[in-house]
Amino acid sequence: AQTVTQSQPEMSVQEAETVTLSCTYDTSESDYYLFWYKQPPSRQMILVIRQEAYKQQNATENRFSVNFQKAAKSFSLKISDSQLGDAAMYFCASLDGNQFYFGTGTSLTVIP
Amino acid sequence: NAGVMQNPRHLVRRRGQEARLRCSPMKGHSHVYWYRQLPEEGLKFMVYLQKENIIDESGMPKERFSAEFPKEGPSILRIQQVVRGDSAAYFCASSPTQGRGVYGYTFGSGTRLTVV
Image (cartoon, rainbow over all chains, first blue to last red):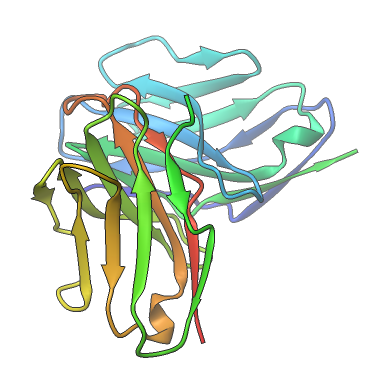
């Protein structure tokens, strides 16, 4: 089994600023996948970004990017130019076989 | 493409009643997964099914919970004799294939079960 740890229950950021959400994981797999999901109040789980562990290059999706440190088993999410619509719970997750392992989430508040 | 459809969105049951949660996967998806989200927690895997087969039920409680994905119709997660501790959001996800990376893995909006 894998474990995923998010040590920041809550974070806040000023609109248009940058924020980084932390995540660490533990796995014995050599090849694995990591994800960030966004969960707004609507409860929908929205895929933000995904990283294949065998890829050296950090994944980027528009204003969202990750800092993947494989040796440290760290996978942080950076949100640039934060917008009010970014306010949500953010979950870090790893994929082992057919099942996801999720962290406990970080609640992000965006201050106008 | 309607996405993964779950119903009902909200379900209230009295202790001891049965709860039935439905999940229709995305069109073309033959793999279904159920997860449970307790308050203030992340989603936790319960069961993985393909049509007419349970592939992995390692996350299912041993008693009162069952799941099926029949040849025709939606996948059903069934909770018998519900207790207050079953109150949670139950999410379904589907994917077109099995395998590393599981591209196309898509979540529904969940069913919030409240046991009173």
